[in-house]
Length: 222
Image (cartoon, rainbow, N blue to C red):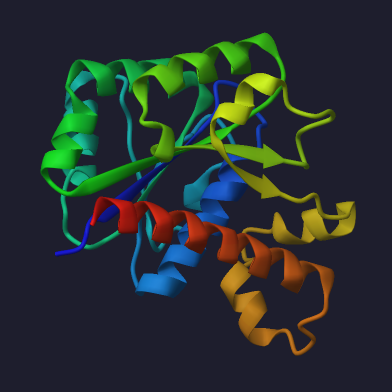
């Protein structure tokens, strides 16, 4: 069986564009594979569960039982791609737990490929957290996300050590449009008759970039 990807969308800071990326990623995987399983660990923030309730489950890592429940689900090589939308308040605890239980080694043994999508910013907290992550996560599996909705300046040189995923900013009226709970990125692609619209092209570029990341990593693993 081919390797099963597990995407961990994360940031140590709030309002980092993390849930937007988790939405785009989940819809892309659902379109590509016909199925996806997402875990929402962000219930104190805008919630992935609100946007994609049909493929999203709530999860917690605040106690041992919650941690075991989550890890038991994401460590399965069942062909169903997983997405973890990790709340900023759970960031440190998640990666501490991951290191303690040997998550990366066990994932490799089971042919599961964790892919960390780190929503980067230029502040000290974000830089310190990224520096710690790059010592824990293999270089090919740590992707720096440049989200122009959030960033106000170029990222520091420190982030050049990783592959980047760039999310372009949308005009304010389009950003408001996609923030409706009823909005679907794939649904828009299917219904919009004019492929030259800014939103259509934005979705297509992001889907293509995500496909490239997954293809490259899974080919390396195989």
